[in-house]
Image 1 (spheres, rainbow, N blue to C red):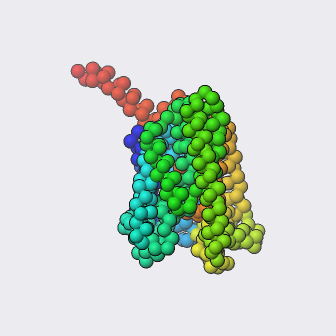
Image 2 (cartoon, one colour):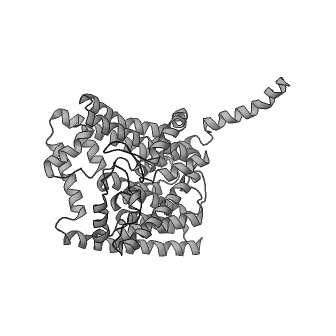
Image 3 (cartoon, rainbow, N blue to C red):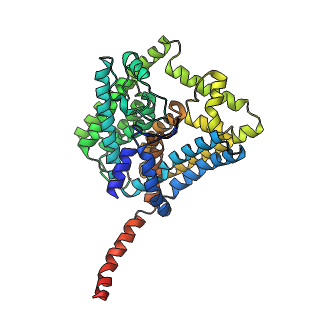
Amino acid sequence: MKALALVWGLAILMPYPALPVGASTGVQFAHLMIALLLPLALINRASIPRAWFFYLFISTAQITSLLVHGMQQVDLNATIINLFALLAIPVTALMFRFQPRAMLTGVALMMGVHGVIGLIQYLAFQQNEFPFGWLYVNPSFAQLTPEWLLVYAEYVKRPFGLFPEPSSLLAAVGPWLVMLIAAMFDTSRQDDGKRCLGPMPLMLTAVALMGTLMIMSASGALLFVAGGATLVLAVMTYRNGTRRPVMTGLVIVTAIAAGIALIGFLGARADSEFAQASGSWFERLSSIRLGLDVIARSDLLDLWLGYGAGHVSYLAGKLGALDAVQSWMLSHIVANGLFGAIGLLVCALLVLHAVSRTSDPLIWLICLAVWVAGPLVVTAYQDLFGIWAFIALPLAVADRAVNPRVTLRATEFRRQLQYRQPAYRGQVA
C-alpha cells in the first residue's frame, strides 16, 4: 500500500508525457493509476464518505446537462474526460487516509523533479534552446509544436517544469507548496492530520520546496503562493513564540523573504502587464468576462442547465476569438448552468465543514485559499490532477478524525487469511 501511495503522489503531478489517444486526449500516468486504484476506493467507500459525496455533488450537474442536451458527441467526450479526472478526489482521499506520509513523499519527489527540469530550462533559455521538448506530448493541453518551443525559448524564457505553462504550474503545485511549508515548520510532528500533515523527511521537503520556489519565481508564478506562504509562516511564528527561538527566528526570516518576494512580484507583474498591449492577465480576465456574458445572455433552460461541456470553448471563440474561458469554475457553470453552480456551492460547504473537523482549520483555510485561485482565475484545464487531488486532503483528514481506527479492507482481508492459514494447514496435516 505504501508503494501505491508513493507512486500516486508522483502521478498526480506528472502531466507529461502522455499517450496520445485521438487529436485532443492524452492518457497520463495518473489515468492509469486511477483505473488501478478506483476499485479499492469503491470497496473502502465507507472510509472516505466525504470524498465520494463531493464527487457526487460535482458530477450530478454534468451528467444532467449531458442528458438534457441529447448526449451530443462533443459534450459526451468532454464530460467523460472531466468526470474521470475528478475521480482523483476519492482516490487521493483513500491514499491520504491510510498512507499520508508515503503519498506526500511522492508529491515532494515529483516537485523536486520539476525543480530540476525548471533549472535546466532556465539555463537553456539563456542559449535560446528548449530542452527535453520530446517529453511534452499530451494532446489534452495546448499543443507545444517545435516552432512554438523555439519561440518560447527565444522570447518568453519562463521555466515551468513538466507542465503546459507557468499558470498551470501555479494552479497544480501552488497549494501543495504552501501545505509542505506548513508541514516543514510544524512543531507538533503528528502523523494523524492534527495541527498539520504529519512528519515529512526534512531534506526531501526542503529540496522540493527550494526547487519549486525557484522555478516559480523565475516564471513569475509566485503570486498566490507567496501570499499563502507569508500567512502560514506568520501563524507558525505566533504559535512558536519564545518556546523555540531558533525555529521562530527561521520562520520570521522566511516569512519576511516571502513577503518581499510577493511585493516584488506584484510590482514586476504590473509593469509587465501594462507594458504590453494585451498581457496574459488581461487576456485571462477578458475570457472570464466573456464567460459571464454567455451566462447573462442565456435563456431559461441554458441558464439553469448550461450549454454542454463541449460547447464552452466554441461559445468563447464565437464571442471574442478566444479558445477558452480561462477559469475551470466559470466554464463549469457555463456548461452546466446554475444547477452546476449550486453543486459547486454544496461542495464548498462540504469542504468547509470538513476543515472545521480538523484540528488545524486555520492552516487548511490558507491552503484552500491558494487552491481556489487555480480553478477560479488561473486555469481551465480539466486534466491537471494535482488540483483535484489537493481538495481531497481535508476531506480525508476529517474522515480520519471521525473514525481513526478504520483499516483498509484489502489489508484486513489479508490479515484474516494469514490468521486462518495455520489452522487450515493443521487440518490438512
